[in-house]
Image (tube, rainbow, N blue to C red; front, top):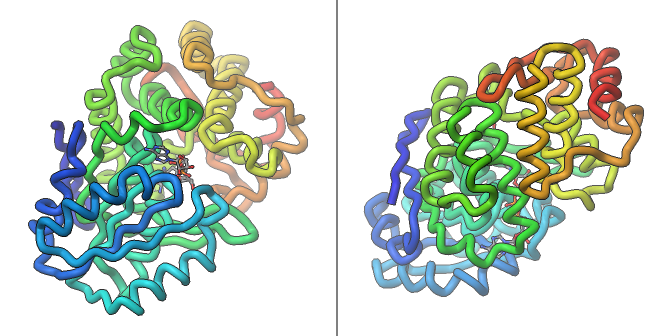
Length: 350
Ligand code: NAD
Ligand code: GLY
C-alpha cells in the first residue's frame, strides 16, 4: 500500500493498494465515533462492491444505510442530489456520521456535494472505483452536480476526510472506462512529470496500478496544496479541457469525457507545435503516446462548432479563455487568450 497525505484546508490520507475495501470499517471508526454510515453508489458499482463495504462497516460497529442511483452522468443532477439529501435527513444522520462515496467520478462529485451541504458539512470518505476517480476526482475536494445550462455548474470545494483507493476494484472496469482514466494519467505526465511520461511509453496501458496512481495522486496533491481554490496553478489540470468540453457538448455527451479530453490534448499540442511553442519532437511523442493507448487524437467536429462551445465553458473569464498549452513534456503554460483568438487555436489543432 502507498499513502499520500494531502494538507489543504483539511489534512487527509489517500491510501492506494489492493484489498483496502475490507479495511473500510476500521478506517471509518478511526475518523469518527459516529453510529451511521450512508454508502452512496450507482446501480453498477453497488452490486459489485456494496456488500463488501457494508460488511466491513458493520464489523466495525456502524449501522449502515445506502443510497443508489442509476449509473451515468445523467444522474449527477439536482433531483438526485435533493433525493440523496432527503435520504440522509430521513435517516437522521448527524454531523458525527459519515457519507461513503463508492464509485467513479459521478458518485464522488454527487456524494461530495451532498456531504458538503448536509448539515453544512458531514464527513466524507471517497472510495474511487474508476481510474479517473482514483487519479483525479476523488482527491482535491471539487464536488458538483450538473445543471441544465451545463456541467458542474453547482458545487463546492469540500475535501474528503479519507480516500481509500482499492486497486482490486479496477479489475471490473469496462475497457473503455479504464481508457478514459488513462487519458488523465497521460495528462499528468505532460503537465508535470517527464519520467512518468517515459514510463508510460514503455508500459503502455499495462502499467503498475499502485505505482502510477500514487504518482498521479502526489502530483495532484502538490497542485491542490499550492492552489486549492483553483485561481492559478490548478487551472493547468484543465489541459485539453477547453476543446474537449466542446467535443463532449457537440456530441451531446455521447463522446466520453476521457476521450474528448484526449482529443483536446492532441489538438492543443498540434497548435502549440505549429506556433513553435512546443518542440516538434515532444509534440510527436505526445501524439504517439495517446495513439498507442488507443485514445483519439482528432475529432469530426469543425472549429466553429467547437469554438461556440468553448465560449460557453465556465473556465472562460470575461473576454478571455485560459488555454493550457504544452511547452515540452513535463511543462505546460497557462495562456490567457482573448476569446476571438480561440477559434484559430482550434483550427490549427485540427
Ligand atoms: P462514472 O462515475 O460515471 O463511471 C463510469 C462508468 O463506470 C459508470 O457506468 C460506472 O457505473 C462504472 N463503474 C465505476 N466503477 C466501476 C467498477 N469498478 N467496475 C465496473 N464498472 C464501474 O464516470 P467517471 O469517468 O469515473 O467520472 C466522470 C465524472 O467525474 C464526470 O462527472 C466528471 O465531471 C467528474 N470529474 C470530476 C473531477 C473532480 O475533480 N471532482 C475531475 C474529473 C472528472
Ligand atoms: N480535475 C480538475 C481539478 O481537480 O482541478
